[in-house]
Length: 357
Image (cartoon, rainbow, N blue to C red; front, top):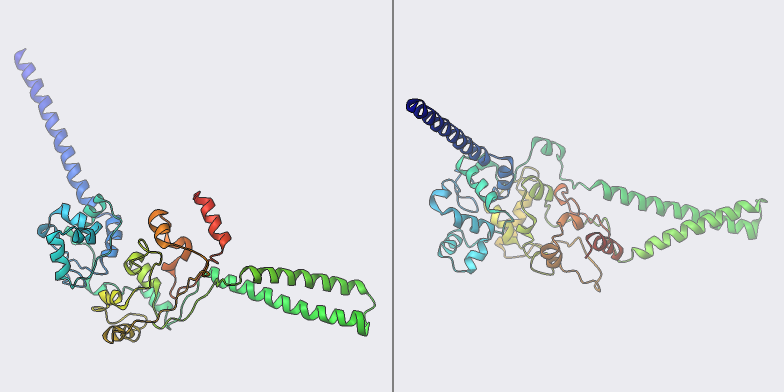
């Protein structure tokens, strides 16, 4: 009897051991797969603009072996907001900042787990090729852009077409109305006066509609798409390379104005990247020349509101958590920026009603 109880106890201990071993093994492998998750690769796409894994120094240091050089808790804080660490007087953060030409790394809205995910992705070697940093183009994109032409969103093209159609209709009806009036009171060739009345009333109705649309849009510039001094593709930078908007427009969360990026920000990457697959060296050369001559690039502002309008980017971006696309459209799909919204008071009020602000 004693022997059988002992055997049962040993059997139970053995089963517990197998169960714990199985759980430990599952946790171990789940951690490895976590490090190779799709989200890690997506989040690391932002890092690719300045860092490589085993490809040497780019704008920032090579990240290979970063977890061996730095403490994980420190890395998480540095990735989330490096400038906050520097301002707090962290010696290591200041050292890293000074060793990398004092180029500020923009804050990243990542959780602790997301940063750990990226670190595991780096430890596993990642999938980053040093030669494909920043100016990454697919064959499909290159083929579709054999010449340097700015793509305009379909909404903007449709809007412009509607405006032209309305203007043409207005001109045609205006001419018909003048002919009808002239015939009605002078020549009197057409005896059916009701035809004149229909033409005149229709022309007055369409004319009134055009007048209303033009009057309400006075001072607005929807579908405005100016040529810039340097051909700059948001589709390549924000879309394909997934560079965060805040990296270039770094005052949007703390200032009234989002700010046009200075040449120094461009040179953070283009110190290394001298040629693009669409424009070659010609457009990037304009940037490097402006930097060498200490001359700002005269970018043309696209989104403008009347002088009497007060709009604060920081309130909307930081406090209201309004996504850039809500006002600026799908920028990551545009080569040349175009103003897709009319930025009217009614448009703003509709947004505030929806968000209950």
